[in-house]
Length: 348
Figure 1 (spheres, helix red, strand yellow):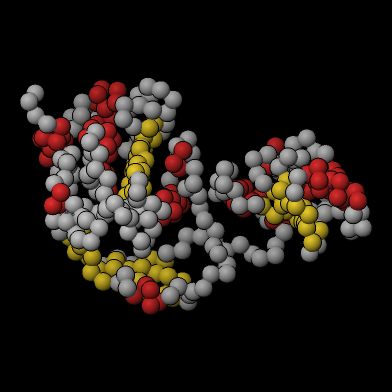
Figure 2 (cartoon, rainbow, N blue to C red):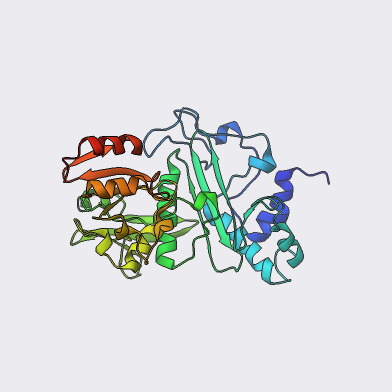
């Protein structure tokens, strides 16, 4: 076949599927942005964050098949949907057997071009200086999402979008994917100020996506941000829940406590503060000591006897980060805490 990769993909994939904003063609210099000027093409330039542009506006890779696709989230979801339908119907974009073969695991967690689990397939993407992206879809064809950012800090935004989608739509999170581990349901910052209406007004107006115009209106009601799109009903934007301040976590219902633990990423856990008088208070029948093994725990208002019990505990011993005595605290290795607790036995 005497055709370039870009020609083949355009003829056999992009055009049949209606992916109008996708190409494998290497951009011409005049189409790309420069440090000071917008190019003729519609290519997003790279940013370090939401404000500071990178010195290199783009990253153009010579290996086209592996890293030469220029596309949009909408187009990627068109492709993903075609794959999902091909998995369940013989008369779709791909032959049924070929779609299934493409998503068969070849090596740990990896199929032919896709990361896979027994329920989902997807692929994250990142390149320096400033692009962070992710696409994921369920094998049953009921779920799919994609986000693309042109910022080095794009995952911070994308992960919040993922968390919101999984929470609001009731999707089951595929925790096996490495790029889904930070997709957790956030809890509200109780010290946060009400939404700034001046900032919100800047986002209100008419938006355009592939020729379709729609109006978005942001507003604040009783300190809560709301969004109205076109003629659709207004919807509130907070998905987080306020946690009651000063309430002993152990007094919360088992169901709520399990939800809090479930929504917390085990690898980058914000410390849990547990107020207790005895170690048994947190190793009761409802949870058990093993439940806390992967958590960093802060104990507060414990007695020296409880401190020694915690320090010597075979499971808890190496997982406690901080032990608080009233308004003072001791922090460091548990052996140091143990010795200091014995020495400073004046603590109540």
